[in-house]
Amino acid sequence: IAKTGFLWNKPGTLQKEDTVIRATTKGRTTTIRALGTPTDNPESVDTPYFSFDSDTPMAFYTGRSRTLGEIKSRIAERKNALKTKNALYADSADAYEAIQSVVGWNMFYDAFNDRGISSVSRIWNQTWGGYIIFDWDTYFIALLASLEHKDLAYANVFAITRSITDGGFIPNVASAYEKSNDRSQPPVGAMTAKLIYDRYGEKWFLEEVYGTLMRWNRWWPKARDNQGYLSWGSHPHPKGMSAHTLQAAKWESGLDNSPMFDGIVFNTETNCMELASVGLMSLYIADCHYLASIAQELGKNEDARELTTRASTYAVKLNELWDGEMGLYRDKNLVTGTFTEHKSPTHFYPLLAQVPTAEQAQRMVEEHLMNPDEFHGEYMIPSISRDNAAFEDNSYWRGRIWAPMNFLVYMGLRNYDFPEAQKELSQKSRELIMQEWTAKRRIHENYNAVTGQGDDVRNSDPFYAWAGLLSYIAFMEEGYVK
Image (cartoon, rainbow, N blue to C red; front, side, top):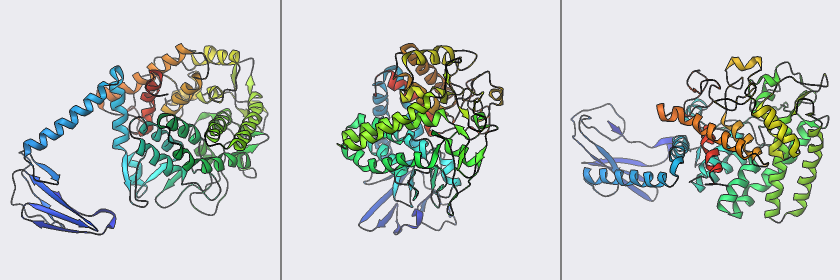
């Protein structure tokens, strides 16, 4: 049974006339046709429909009348065109296919705003009553889409950027009926916008998002400065999903259950965790640099100077978190004044901010990133070091591998002279995603850092869009994108 209908209460009429159904909207009529072996199968269906014997080939299409052979030929033509496109990426053709599949499958029509965008997962959209987009997820999906689909990349950037709250920040969550008015999420918007601009070079795209991204950048020091450092937080708000709790602050970090936050106090007066976050400070400094570059492209030199000054101010504070004995930047508990015991990929994010000296960067990479007792291994990079007690939990951000962490660390390595580390992280990231893509056609939300499996736990969505970043790293390494 092929049933017709108008979704989302859109206006129009449907009428069956012999072997066709005509759908009429304002200013347009679409002719829907079908081929196959009809069946006399009356169904209690409230709109016009076709009924066919499914044991024989059938086709549904619009436009002029075609034969089954013509339709099969058209499908084969498009399939071959896709294969030809894949072949352009040589050994990375399978990685290209994975990205296109996960972004394409998770693309949907948002009837509330009359737009097409790609979300993290269809499952999430259904659960949230129409659509849901997350801050850094959506920016990263835009980057993936930019590999081939400029308009979809732009649409995703616009969708999340325009969701800015009255408070002046991009929310953790924006959905059909509400948004998180108490918290933001990692500031990766300027980086994403600049990388997409570098691919297509359309200045109007930067002009469209610059003002909002600048407003968001200015919000962080106002809302999350904590003793000169930056800390994840959540503030009270009378509307929307306002939580004002430690868990809400964890959600702002994007690392919902990371052991980095175990035992950390949430200060309800400052609205911040009492934790100087290496990850947040590094991402913010990088945001300042990328946004300053955008400002210069747009001739806003005064803004660029403001951003550079702010980046330098926080770079000084970030350097206070350098542990010379360990050879790594470390989070600081602001209640005890001591470094925390945890080591995470976020502690390599200073490379993204270009704060470490060459000597510091070398220690970070050689002593920690490439250390098999911590982050190196057949599968990389675990979300907490292998020698951490929480690594064995293998649940979400407690030990599993996540694509955005790999991507951000890879971007940091590109700022320094670590060609072998770059290449190895690229290869391991691609091999990780290809393992289940090849065997099961799945692209998981996160992966086991010991076995490389994605489906060994229930809280790893089997077709999660931003996981495509594991493939995207390979495209950057091989020079297909900057």
